[in-house]
Image 1 (cartoon, rainbow, N blue to C red):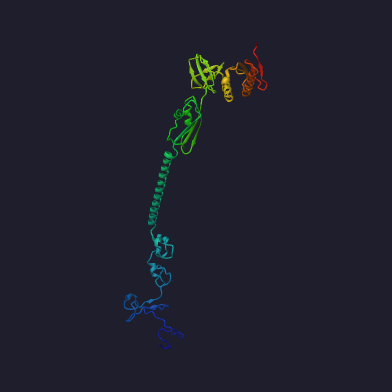
Image 2: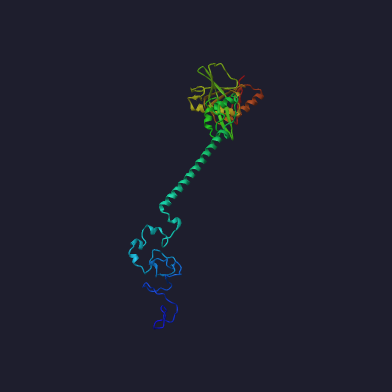
Length: 367
């Protein structure tokens, strides 16, 4: 005890809690204790402590302490560092998202290494996608080839509309062959191939899945004939020349003889060319109606010299004055009805006028 009656280290006011003194010359700090030495003490407090750490003050570690922040008792350390470290400037501090250095696992990987790893992963994924697309493409190509060679190949060919031509002749002329792809078969190409034979007309081609083709054709039918420059020709209803021969003595019993035509060009396999466009139109219109009414075999001849005065000769012996080309269908129907009635009445010759189809007239031949 000193003269004041207090023990060494005792606070004024009678507080008996001792306050440790810093024997190294520094002031005592609350909550800190002095490193002690001596026998019987633990290693951390005993002789194993280095000489420079003995007789120092120790205390609890501050929570969340930053290793780069020094206590106020050592400001001289800041003077020994660069401004970048004291002010936390530079790339190192920019990479750190916390207020001090700490281990953060994958975040501590250098950016260059992360970029390299990401690039490698992206290349592997891109390679896998390309491989998958290539496999899918090869499978699709294989499927298309299989469908082309098996499912949609032509295995059956039917022909409709042929009369004088055989089925095999029509198929050979169409260019369609067994094993061809049904889906890619071109109808226009088939039409051109069939009509290269002027005796045939193409009507339609029907595709029946999976492998059947139906070819519908129509054979050109001769409906009229004419004699020109010592040659005998037959024509269909559109004026197509189907046949020619130098035997001019032929007079077919079922064909109509054409008279009064001004011919410019006539050749087998081509449509007859006339000097007057009006005659060309009359020829096609007249025989189209004759074909529809089915009266071609009853007409022996047709004189088309004058477009306003068309004359027919029937095989029954009657002459017919049609007038112009107006209402040809009605005029021909009226002609057929009058002819039938006259035959029932016992007439075998005379002139039937149907220029007004609703009011036909008949003039018998003079006896």
